[in-house]
Amino acid sequence: MNDRERFIATMHYQERDRCPICDFGFWDETIDAWHEQGFPPIVEGEGRGEQASEFFGMDRWAGGPTIEVGLCPGFESCIIEDRGDHEVVQQGDGVRVLRAKRMSSIPHHESHLLVGRESWEEHYKPRLDPTNPDRYPDWQQVRDVWDDPDYDAPRTVKGGSLYGWIRNWMGMENVSYLAYDNPDLFGEMVETIADCVVGCHRIAFEHGAKFDACSMWEDMCYNAGPLLPPDLFKQFLVPQYKRITGQLRAGGCDVVYLDSDGDIRELIPMWLEAGVNCMFPLEIGTWGIDPVELREQYGKDLLMMGGFDKHILARTKQEIEAEVHRLAPVVDESGFIPFCDHRVPPDVPLENYVFYVETVRSVWGKDVNLKPIVPLQLRTSV
Picture 1 (cartoon, one colour):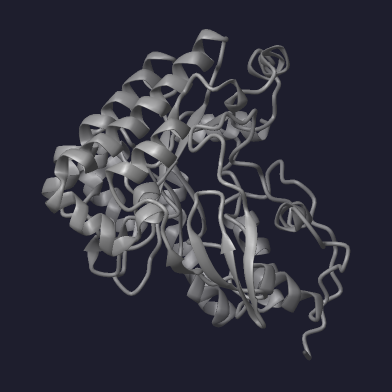
Picture 2 (cartoon, rainbow, N blue to C red):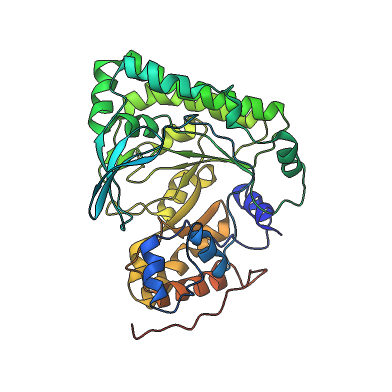
C-alpha cells in the first residue's frame, strides 16, 4: 500500500497492511536543539519540518494541489517595527502582532483591522469572493493528480474556519462581544466564509476534483472548554458546517478533519451532527482527553488523529513505551492515526524521540512496509 491507500483504508475501517506512521511536525527550536544531539545539520531552512519527517521515515497524511479558500488576496506581510528580540509584524490576515524573533510561541495581537461592519465590508468581505481566479491552480496540471490512481499521498482540500479566522481577525474579546451585541453581523461573517468555501469547492468539483479528505481549522477551545458558547455554536456554525460537508460528501469526500486545540469534548457531538467526523490533533492537555475513552463513547463514528501526549515524550522511555502499548488496541481497530498531540516541543530529547519512532514502527506499524529511517549518531551526553 502507498500512503494514500493506507490513509483511505484507515479512515474507512478497511483492510490495510498497517497503521500510518506519521507526525504533526516539530518546533523550529526542537530541530535546533536536536542538532546539538546528533541530528543532521542538513535539515535547515524552509521545509525542514518536512525534511525531519522524511529522516524519521514518516508517511504522508496530506497532499495534492492547493486551493485557497480564505482571504484572497491576502494583506501585505511586512515588518512594521523592530523591537530588539521582538518585532511588530503585519500578517497576511491584516492583524498586527508582536512576535519573538526566535521563539515559536503564539504572537501577541497588537491591533486589528477588522473592528465592525465598515471594516468588514471594506477590507474582508471582498477578499472572500470564491470566483477570484487567483485561488486556483492550473486545472490541467491538477487533473493529472486527481486522475492518477497511483498518486501516493491523500488528496486533501482546505475547508476553512468558521470561527477561528474571525477570532484572529478581530481578537478574542471583540468576537466574544460581537456574537452577543451584533449577532446579525457575526452570522453574516460566518455565512460569508462558508459561501466562499462552498463556492471554491464547487468550482473545483466542476473541474474534476477528487478529494480524499478535507482539513478545517478552528482552535476554538481552551482548557475549560469552548470559547464560543455551545448554543451559539449550534445556531451559527452547525448549519454552515453542514453546507460545506454536504457538498463534500456529494463530491465523494467523506473524511473531514478539524484542528482545534483545547478541551473539545462539549463540541464533538455537534461537529459529528454537522458532518465533521475527525478530530485533530486530539490534544490531551491538563483536561485529559483520551482516545481510548472517546472510542468507547463514540465507537467508529468518530475518526481521530493525534492523541499521543507530547509531554510523555520528554519523560522516560518506559513511559513512552507504556503509552504506545496502551493506545495499540484502538490503533489496531483503525479509524485512528496516532501521533504527537501537537508539534514536538524542544524539551523532548532526540534520543527519546528516536525511541518513540522505533517503538511505534514496531507496535503500531507491525514492522510492515515501513519507510527507511536515516541512521543517526546520537550524542546522548549533551
